[in-house]
Image (cartoon, rainbow, N blue to C red; front, side):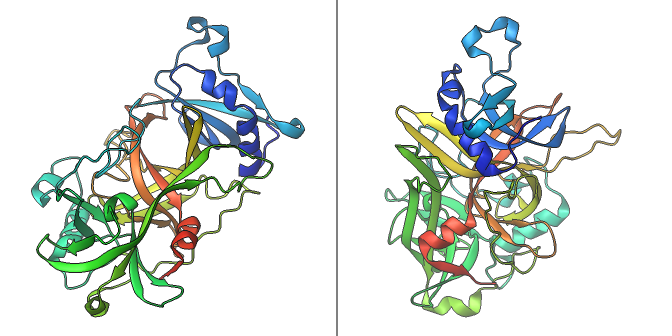
Length: 379
């Protein structure tokens, strides 16, 4: 058994073993959380290492074998968990490509007839999407936002939640940086020639690591935060409803406590303009990968719920997010609906045995976003 008991312990162990992790050929980064064994989430803390293909140790050079345990400072130890993942680890939902977000690729908003086709949605979520695309008289968190990039190309994203500026007390909305696109950009609802919702005034794509982890002082480290504040137009106040459509009130932000395992293993739910209302589980925290001499991080990895086939055999999970859900708010799946994270992208990873590649989603800790943008959630 491992000695690690908290996210902070795991982060210190991972930091002490970054050279070992990076030595693994074609590794796709790492995260920390609980170990997954025999298709089930355990309560054993582990460092999770992503690889393009899992191979038996017999076929690997000695320096390519990932040990069962990792050792860190102060005698700390933890288990490892190796997960097979898609080499295109950053598969972004909307307007950014896979080459580390440097170039734009646009995605026009999809008509509902295409949304119905793949992957399948139930009748409840078809009705939810109709509402979020303009069939009702209010704009809710989860509604579709439409914008144009600096070249005039159209794209779609999701309004995460409504907020209030801590200094000016003006109303605003949260979404992703890559949905807001640039300062001064105007976003629309429900069509490109519809209502002007707000203007992008504050945006953050990624920021220097704030040395937030105990006894970790990593150089050239950056966090992907992908968040933006839209200042609502003055006449929008009577057009909005701050409740998450199909879910309800938004609760207080869930604190991130590195002295525990935090939100890892916790069930969450969200509503977005592509998949409607979807549930899932936070599977890991602090995904990290290296690019040259720099390290890049994001916060939570979320896996969508499973569906069961008629004979009781697990089938593919419901996708927690898809193209167009960028910017949606993730909350706890309980009566509190505490805000947890803002979704910004997704990928595929084969976490559970005898299953095809599963859809993961990436989220940024909501506390970090609220402090960066200096806003509070309107609930």
